[in-house]
Length: 477
Image (tube, rainbow, N blue to C red; front, side, top):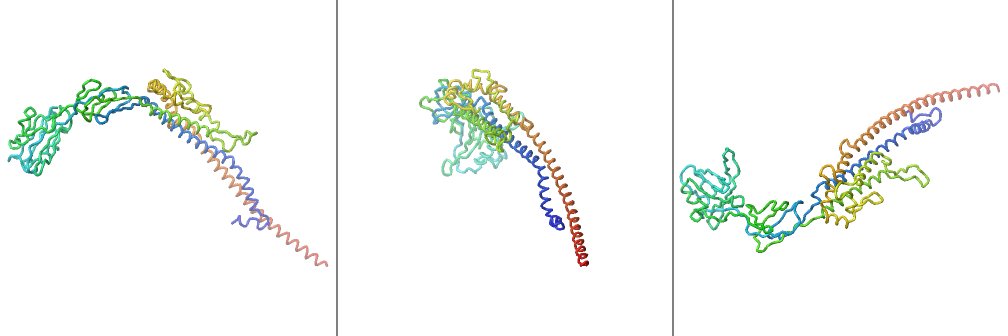
């Protein structure tokens, strides 16, 4: 309200004068605002730097793994076998012949007309015992109402093996009912795993009536009640002329780093080729170089300098927020020093594998030289990056150094925390100066109000005296 009537008594536009004084006072905030903007830009700049470093470190981490330098490709006839190879598989051509596949053992009862019909005697309980070549014995207790094919199969599948120490474990057989014709059902018991040691050697019951249907003795298979529908057998194949027997069709480490899964019997020897796969290595190195170059672009943006004009040293408002910053400079120089110092080993610097630094400080890959180095001596390339697998090697050293920059309480966090502390002090100072300005303007307002009243009173007195003088002059006439 005071602002709206200020100056009405004096006829002077004191509001405009007060606004001008306030504008002048507000200039005291300008340097603080400039400092706040600078600090905020630096904090943002360090955030961008940390992001670029994190991306670079993620790419570096991939090169810490020696396996990336020993990629393998495998080719063979998938109709007969499939192969899985790891980085330590020896390169070469191998001959594979499959004589027979591993198979699970299966025995079956004769067909019965009703799968739910009771097949046992009138005893309240009986035991069905299944033994295997692996020494496992499964005792299945059946009640009077559990002697049908359906009930026997369910009981076998739910039963546990009781071990010598009293503990229980899963059995290695299962059972199912096969409908072999119209009103024709057979109980089939099958080992869960392949191989001769998983063979079912005996099936028997203390229920004579039931036993006449389910008894089996592998040594007297022809005279047993149950018949073999699939014989247990190990896989047999040759690998480069060496005969290999396996209980499973999947053979781990048939040679170091090579797993093979047999699928069918061969009629002729099949070729298996294990060759070097440098494509993934090249992709990882390209990703690493790209990440480093992006880091350099980020650093260039954060430290760019442009004079206001050709003859001026004054900073341009578009200059990078971290121009001249010692923390950023130390980070950049620390990484570059690792590239230049040289590593122990047959290969010591990046230029020996076709990775060079151009005049702009960025890395450039010479594809032909890199391919040649990987083809001729991938192990030496691996050592260049992985060193002793812990502290030496370009990848290990760079990763450790960059981690010290970007980890919690690292160099960047330390710099950022210092800037945030400065920013808080500036915010406090801003509030103090702003409050001081408000107080000064309020003091001016009070003074102007008093001045306005005084001038108004003086104007009133002047008008009164003028009137009196005019009256006195008129009386003398």
